[in-house]
Image (cartoon, rainbow, N blue to C red; front, top):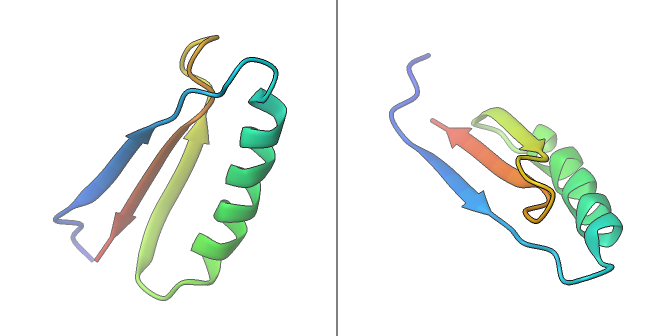
Length: 59
């Protein structure tokens, strides 16, 4: 299966809200895993002020 598009969304948590944003994206990962056509999904901490980054690729 060739991936021909994707989405990169950088998210910056409000002060003191990094854990809440991380939990939100954990729930998003669970939903993405259930979606038909989702090839890959990542969330990672790229910068202490950008928590985390959400990447989704779909066919």
